[in-house]
Length: 323
Ligand code: UDP
Image 1 (cartoon, rainbow, N blue to C red):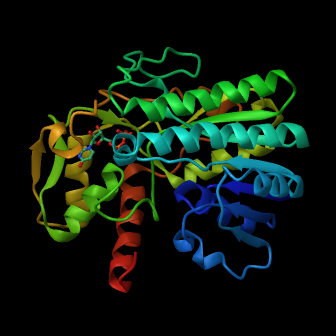
Image 2 (cartoon, rainbow, N blue to C red):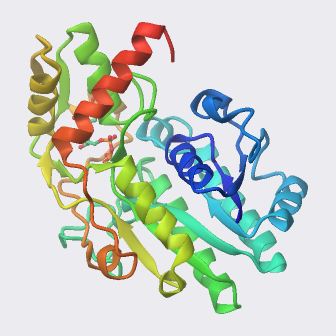
């Protein structure tokens, strides 16, 4: 198969590219980001890396006409971006998605769209079922621009699906693993990893009772591959997550234990990290029935095992001095 991954130099996209190449597919990635996460594939005869933007319609047209299947993963992600650069979040996530879907529609190519558990916002209807309510705060709170941008992307998917485009919407839940973000930035696990490495206190926001279901990237990729190959997934939203709900405080304790670091925990107000434009989500738990029934994927890597692998990988990187 010929597969296009927009955002293929990103965290999930790069792991997906590895899996597709391993099974013998031809893979082209379109990404504005550097090749840091795909450097090991450069030179692979079935791998092509096009450094450009999904906002560049001409490039997107050429690549979509080449491929059999599109994974549309290009997006601006991460809380620091939602609150730091909401314009880029909206521009890339809304306009880029519109471009990719429009081109795929004209070419008649199936699209798998990477959406997010952020779409549910701070709904209290836990676990989150795909047809459940979305609860968001004010538009004056920049945090919600990402959730909104992904929800608009989903609406575009279903609008095109109504006109005949085969689409699958995946909502990812706190995916982690090797190549996540640079240490100290991005998502909570890479922030804690940086603090552990320096022996600095882990900054748990609020009382740390907020929960997440962290999903190891390998499980995520298995679900993502299945979504591209399963006819029953077309026209659906499917949560991709794990069933292990953990509080951020327990996560911090677990990471300290697994790493053998002497770091302690410090509880900090959310404003000290993200300013006023941030609101936390108290509980985020996926309903995984569709993932199990339609995609036939059950998460297999435990949180302890996944964190160990992630810690080992990041340690290897800091020894080599990159990234
Ligand atoms: N968090 C924390 N300390 C940090 C960064 C994040 O306690 O230094 C918390 C954050 O408030 C949230 C959780 O960790 O409750 C997950 O944050 P992340 O940004 O990774 O993803 P989110 O699930 O909020 O999109």
